[in-house]
Length: 202
Image (cartoon, rainbow, N blue to C red; front, side, top):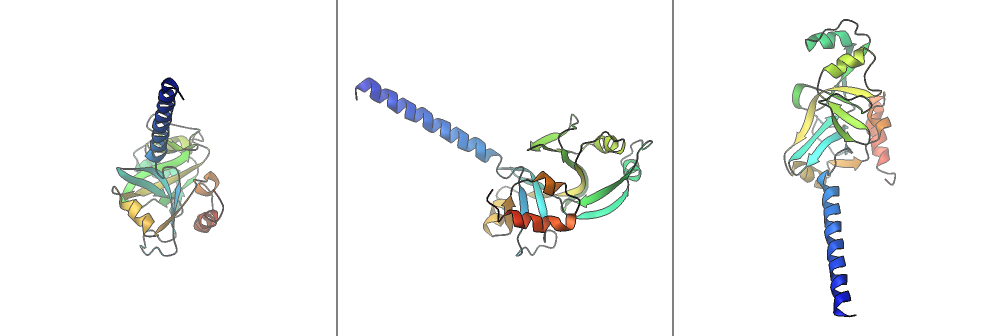
């Protein structure tokens, strides 16, 4: 191999290594964002026993997730809108309020399919978004909301490195974010369904 070809080979290998590093970094940047945390049977924290958590954000700065299988109450969406100080005229139907986690229990979030978005909405992954603007609930009450949704109060939060420690300790399994499971109507079955998913090659 002459010097020119040798230099070209070195350059190509260097360029390929940079590309692989950048690709790996891009893949790692979102960590568990868009996936499900499933409490293991060994989980002892009563706030999280048999919970399934949708991970909205996970990075070096920490993690943010919403419990999706603990409904708290069901009531007229009209009353909920009044509580937010929004005109509830024309509002129809009922809405289920879910426990999302122990942090900021009065903070409301709508986890939903991304077929309807507001300016404030944040797309997460695989057709799922999160909105904290109560105007989305108003749209839902008028039949103009997203096809799939969960209204959630509170959230689960982790400081940098905290979730990684819990994963190493065996507190959680991780499975893919399945929309059918996330937005399923039978909350009591979600944990078992999520546990079963970990046995299926992903």
